[in-house]
Length: 186
Figure 1 (cartoon, helix red, strand yellow):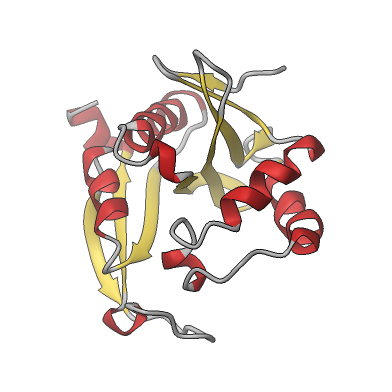
Figure 2: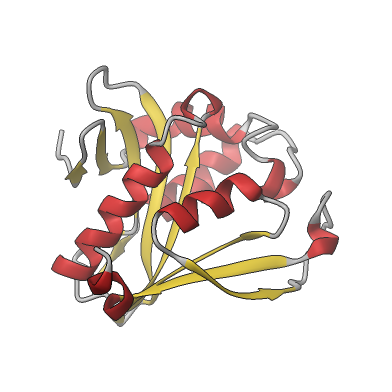
């Protein structure tokens, strides 16, 4: 299997059609999806027809994908995924960082480890100029990962939630890190 990026404990690899069951289990966990859709159950058909194709998409300006399956390097256990994709399909200058890990991986440092490695690769190999990440203001765990990965709070804002979920009334936050900032503290 092709490995896109390795860290001390993680292997990030391209998704395949065979990952549908892993994705369904991840998206079907109400705790994992609490800040995404309020914890509503996933639909296996939606995972196959909408989620998986998005994760399999190649970004031409990168010459690779923007989402990677995360596995524990020592065991090969599926932990979730990382996003590091260009916001504009024609330019790799600004990318969005994201992650979704199963509960067993929470509190282990995997999210920070994978985020830092992607940021480093983006700034050194892909010509990225700015990394951005968003989450709900109340999602303190995700905010802490962003901070530990070197991103700083840029702004708070309110989004247009078609289906409001618990905490959405407190808005969202955007974090960012520029290449110049990263070079000061790589």
